Image 1 (cartoon, rainbow, N blue to C red):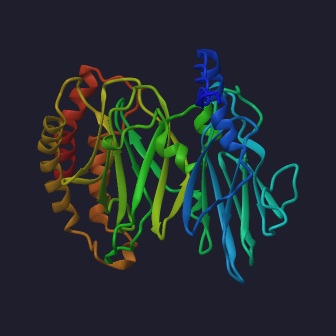
Image 2 (image 1 turned 180 degrees about the vertical axis):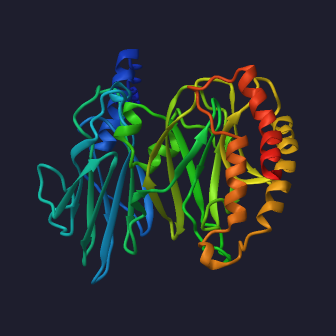
Length: 397
């Protein structure tokens, strides 16, 4: 009987290790990843209120689902934070077919080639939609087709069932008071009446050098607050003033470290609570080109002054104000002595205090408002210094 033999063991199969991807293949996969994510047709579920940011390649899309209950109203706001860099100087102020809304589970990816309930275009970087949605809201954000395939469109989507998270105020929120070569003064409207008190609103001022992009995105809160050319907030100093005939409280913003001879655009935004931001219409202003002017304001002896006055180059603002005060004070004393002969408190004389009117007139004569078009020579500076003496003599006579 032949001896028993053990079966010859079969070699274990070994998987061949994957070949490493070439550098070109790695780059291709990385380039396609954001696009693949952006083109996902599965909506992301969000709650109310919430804000989502999307970075989309040209023609790409993103979808959001908001669960709602019966009798719900959905408020959508969409802001364009940044276009592809290649379009920064040519971006149109109107971009069609960007925001889409559906309130039916039969259309969970609303867009230009699918069914939808409502749509909105971007105008100056902003779009909004308001609609009833009893059984949920499906939202689609579609990037325009323009731009390089390697570039991105950045959007901020606000979703709420109580109120729109961004509200555009058609009125300018700031008034331009004046500027010198490097500093500007902006102020809000009164938020309280004369003789009353009120909590200071949560105002913020944003200042950007005027450009084609700042015009095209003038209604986008996320662009305005994050622009690469935005004047840093550390250079924007807010304070309270009662300047003006009404005497109410308002906020003023002194903006420093500006460039001479430059056009700027300024916005005011207000945090009104509940995550809601109100953005006002922008205002435009320009800094002066010359260095012979100095912006002054909030001065105890001239509280109504808020403009650029003549100033020798290199003189400190504190020295300048001391010089003005030393020449103005004697004139004011004489002027007020003369006014004491008149019934200034008699309402029949008019609704304004003749004492205040006279003081403002005297200050205006001694401290004229100047602009870049006026040069400050030795003769004009001597007139400013001597004007207080001249006016004092006239008042005494």
